[in-house]
Image (cartoon, rainbow, N blue to C red):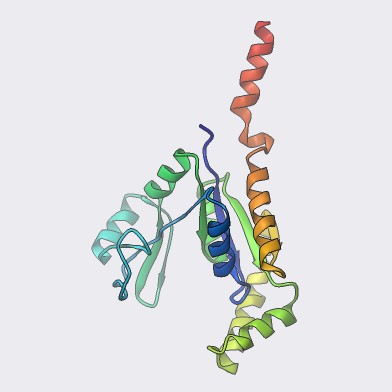
Length: 205
């Protein structure tokens, strides 16, 4: 069985990453969503192993010491991280694993697992990004400015990614994302074993 690919998705706040990934999982059954481990308490309706793996600070810090996380970060007093064992289990079973994290975390993952596929999601223009943030209805003008300033910083790291996905039409973007990931399975560097096998078979003829 061919090993799955770890796909890291990043993008500007307001680019529609969450909606894009939700639709990808609805439309295609090829993927597993990576489940993060966190020290924040579960919210009402959340279950351990579904939304997150919920752990204590002591348990999380043990995972750090044991190098059991692909990446981790601290946010508002809580840890968030990607458990390596869960991801490896899914990849080993042949499933492509989707992980949504910000740029800094994505580059840490690529550093640790070099064959990770990095995808960056953006609206078709900065003006469209501003518009999407404004029509959410949950952002104050100050919050919109803050998110746009953050997007300006994040834009400096886009060229570190493998592919750019322009989220103009959702269904089109979902299909492009799916085809990019599936095409990766045929990349030569991911098929050294198959190449070696046919080379040996040809020598034996």
